[in-house]
Amino acid sequence: MKLSGITFLPTYNCNACCSHCFFDTKACKQYMEPDIVHKVFENYKITKFMTWVHVSGGEILLNQRACFDLIETIQLYFKKNIGISTNAFWATNSSVAYDVVQTLVSLGVNGIAVSADYFHSPYVPLSHIKRAVQAIVDSGITTHCYIMGAQCKSDVLNSNDINSVSQQIAAYVKGNTNMPLAPTNIRSIGYGSKINLPKKQIVPNGKCTDLSECLGKRGPLNPKMVWIDCYGNVMICYGIIIGNIYKTSFAEIIANYSPKQSIIIDILTEKGPIGLYELAQQMNVVVVKEFYDECDVCYSSRKALQPFFSELGPAECYPY
Ligand code: SF4
Ligand code: SF4
Image (cartoon, rainbow, N blue to C red; front, side, top):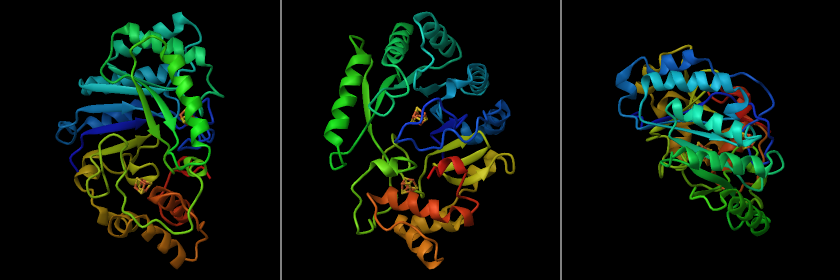
């Protein structure tokens, strides 16, 4: 695998419980140790073609000291684009907002994505998000800064109402700044599977092509990026582990990656998510029978199969 970038997931923990979240954000408060970053970058051959690193969660700024230490460690090795995602709960006043953003920028962060939509609004006051946006704009970083809004596809139940609220929220926090809006469709992964309704009785039989939201069509044959979590799990999609850097060097995990390394990834590659659904049926594992799309088939089947396959984990990626 030739990596273009890595998303670090320093924690699954979050102050919020958004109804579309990929993760169980209340199960564990563990935060990534910087030694994971050292292990990732110890072999320059594997990371030298990368153009970006992203740090996401969970809410990474729940533990500000640990977050800053981690980004400082990343910057020791990687001087290109470093982006983060946050829900901005920490921007309790302008002074705090400016301090946090300035610290991030001083550590080499040149992109900050802030979430603002219908789903986040019960947990984070809009005034906090607006303050964070202003502090980001005033910091002068512009390359990869966005107001991220989860939106429902047009065929999803109540999509008009939900998207309309999200658009109003995004417009409010943007105000008269030039921060671009980046609406992203809710994926049928984790709790997102409960949002994407109605489900169809025919099992969708397309291939996996949506491994990454922003790198175009990507499947298990050409992943291009990995997620690395606080347990050292290296994943090609949330909850599909291809190795653990506490057991195997990161260089080996990436250099030796092949869809054939795992029954789950092999089936996913050859047959698509419907193959995992069939596997669950062959194993007499109970799995739901109605799905919104291919990711829904994949997530629901993996959730059912998870107790039997060590590459399906951690538990935080299978919230219900
Ligand atoms: S979607 Fe983001 S802000 Fe919401 S619970 Fe999940 S990690 Fe937290
Ligand atoms: S949920 Fe499954 S089908 Fe969807 S992108 Fe991830 S691995 Fe592919």
